[in-house]
Length: 206
Image (tube, rainbow, N blue to C red):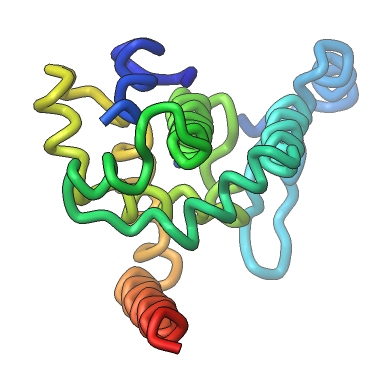
C-alpha cells in the first residue's frame, strides 16, 4: 500500500496476521497561465469561501474517481460491513493471509492512508476536502482497536500515522464548524453497528 511511513513491506504485512491576490488582470492572467488559478476567492452570503486552486480541485476529483474503481468500491463495501475487530486475533480470523478479505482490508487502509498523506501535506485545501469527505474517519474508527498491536508487532510507531493525524484534524474541524457533531456521529455509528450485529445474529439463528 502506498502512503505508509514504514513502506510497502510493513503495510502488506498487516494483512498477514482509510492567497488571496488583490491585483488586477495581470495577476489573474498569471494564475491562469500556470494552471494554479485560485477558485472560491469571493465572499458568499455565508462568509469567505475557500481558496482552493483548480489543480487541487482536479486532484480531489481524481481521488474521488479512484474511490469509484469497481474493485476498490467492492473492498470499501466489504470493509464497512465486516471489518469490526477488537484485536489482532480477530483480524487473522477475518482476513487470513492470501484471502480476498485480506486484499480488501489492505486496499481500503492503503487508499485512505495515501489520501491522508496527500491532504496532510497541503496538496488539497483541507476545508474543501473535509466538506465532502468523511469516510476515512469511519475507516479509522474501525482500525483503531488493533492499531497499537500492529505498531508493536511491526516495530513501526508511524503505521497509519497519516490517517491518524487527518482524523484528529477532521474532528477538530467538525467541532469548530458544527459543535457536537463528533458525539452525534459516534452515537450514530454505534447504533448502526448494534443494528448490524443484531441482524447478523438473527440471520444465524433462523
